[in-house]
Amino acid sequence: DIQMTQSPSSLSASVGDRVTITCRASQYSNSYVNWYLQKPGKAPKLLIYAASILHAGVPSRFSGSGSGTDFTLTISGLQPEDFGTYYCQQSYSIPRTFGQGTKLDIK
Amino acid sequence: QVQLQESGPGLVKPSETLSLTCSVSGGSVTGYYWNWIRQPAGKRLEWIGRIYSSGRTIYNPSLESRVTMSVDTSKNQFSLKLTSVTAADTAMYYCARIGNDHYDDFDFWGQGTLVTVSS
Image (tube, rainbow over all chains, first blue to last red; front, side, top):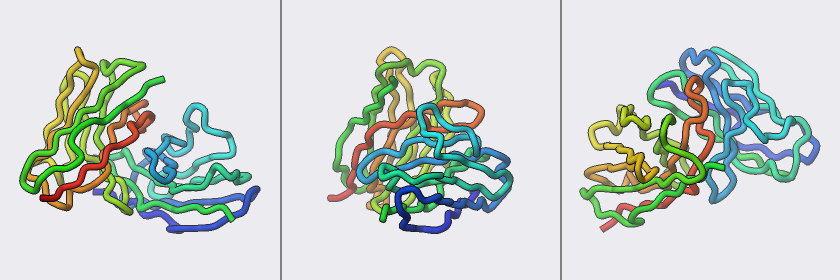
């Protein structure tokens, strides 16, 4: 199985900040990485697929990059509604696997 | 807008079979891949497997011996059966659709249903 490791596991940031979350795959994953945001008690929501393609309706302050084993999610200009837990997920091989999550609190 | 809704018992006894159904509205199950994903409290998401509208399945090898998925296109729904459950199977269970076949992103999710395994 491909293990997905995110860093940091948690962070606090202020409205307007630029936030970066990284995800490292234990094996080559090409560009087959997706990012989700999960709010407490809710299902995850897709933000980015194929490492860098913004899902429909997702604000342009979200962006993704990376290929191979290292991937990044960036939020440029943090908004209050961006709090929650972010997950990366690889779709390069079976079984699909997720990172452990990065919990983002708004200061 | 596609909507998914999980249904099934919230409490299952150890060694018994967990059965869940996901009803799809606002779109058709035909032509898409449909997934089951679970999340134990405070833990990461775990992909259980997927089924295409034709009935073709792929399961997580760690669960494959206990999992069966099926699809009913006439009812626009798909189902999960997990046999011989233990406390380790206690989790929030989500159904989700794959939006892009090439990149396997989960673009629509159900709200989730909590399943507790306990006697």
